[in-house]
Length: 79
Image (cartoon, rainbow, N blue to C red; front, top):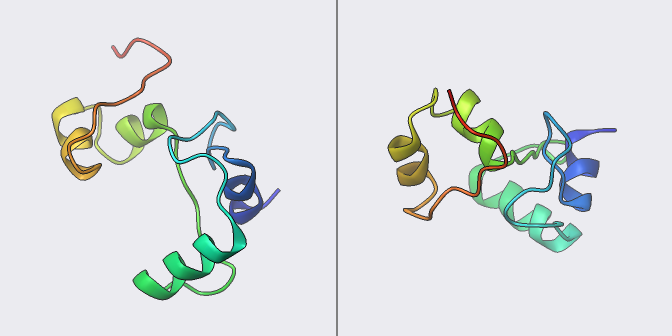
């Protein structure tokens, strides 16, 4: 399954867990792609757990900052 197919189902690209946004519509995907300059086959989303570990390198404050200040919705305890 491609990252876009997972986004349309509201699943994390890496672990298949639900993402904060939920399922993306075709219109939302097209708007995001146009807004940030992605190709038509590019788009992915990560659950907060994967975002924390892969993007923010385990730093919850940094992850929250990157996510516009919203609290993380974590499924598992972080080490």
